[in-house]
Length: 473
Ligand code: NAP
Image 1 (cartoon, rainbow, N blue to C red):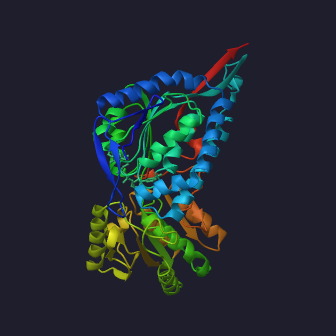
Image 2: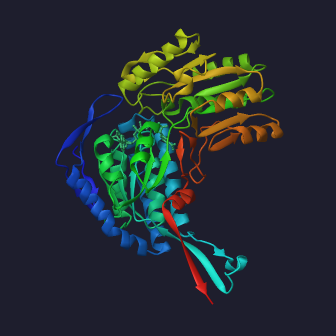
Image 3: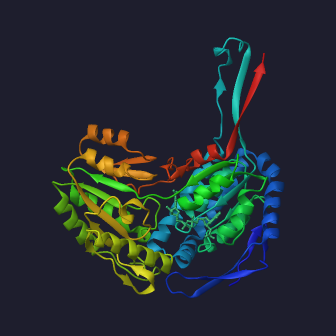
């Protein structure tokens, strides 16, 4: 199946192609165009030409396009989920959840399109400001370069395309090389939804070869990137004065106080650790449990892990399937073995099965210096360590280069609020796992987890410029 790129509302053949393989079966599933400089230029030019048209659309016109898209997505829900599963080996039940969330993301975008407003400023608050009325409005920034990762190939694209359309911007999107199919399918639905030609252009190819041409082009006024910290940092360095939103990685942690209902926490914690084989930016990687309930927690956690089904992502009972690449399986095994050699206890997993599937792995008593603790594992590996107090848990959570989200379970509200104050992260989940996200909440990190926020309303702030208009009476 030879795919085409969406440029200026037309489906364009590539001059060069690369095969795309299923991460589960290893079979070839498509041929994907590799954009060359001329094709990148065409996409940028199309976006630049369409920016005036997009900026002139009324709020209700932008909203209607997004509402039409939502209708299309609802009609093609199973097809979308199957594409996600095919290209990423995401188990079907998780892929369906992703499509449902994508629908919510565009629904929120359709709503936010209608309520983009500024504020009035009391100019006479300053001497010399008398007899003036001022107000602000938000204007689209123009052309945005959007680069997305493999792990939520539809919903993380939605977090860029949704707010961009809602706020009257144009986009050149480059999806991850492993997961272009769902992004290209979205392009088909966008065309059906009535989006003006050139407003969203989708080009494919390797980020390391075509990324720079997008990021450094003078027509691009903002770069929105979701992906690894390494690439994010490089983008920031090259982006100059452009606005840059970076949604990067993490080694998310959970603190569990004594006195809580362990039974209730366990299924959430297991889901947070092993959903999509841990390839989630807020995957639960580190659990710090109070010593009074440590043994009970570990025993119940391991019993719950045993219930997970491993296998074919298209099998509806599968919970854990292939990692995205063989390289990631090898890297993870190396990190797990290193931790064990240095004294960590392997409580379960650690073994590779057929099809690049790594068994859900639980490590106990892991030192903070181990890679499985201080780096982002991005694989089905979680560590459970004992703590003697919440303060000790906070110390460990904060001893990280990352700071995306963290969770704390405690029955004591004062303690919960103290923990929330102390944690150095973008979001704190009290009585829930750090893996919790709904698509309208402000979402983003501190430290090496990134800069800027997504969640439609907040992404629109990143994608627009504030203009002040002052009237002298
Ligand atoms: P990645 O390797 O950084 O790739 C992300 C995107 O960047 C891909 O489209 C990739 O293209 C492109 N890219 C690679 N090198 C580039 C360069 N030099 N210039 C411009 N673009 C370049 O990340 P991934 O493996 O797909 O995703 C996993 C990472 O994303 C994890 O760290 C995870 O935590 C993070 N993530 C963060 C969030 C969040 O919201 N904070 C959400 C999801 C994932 P190719 O595919 O062609 O290499």
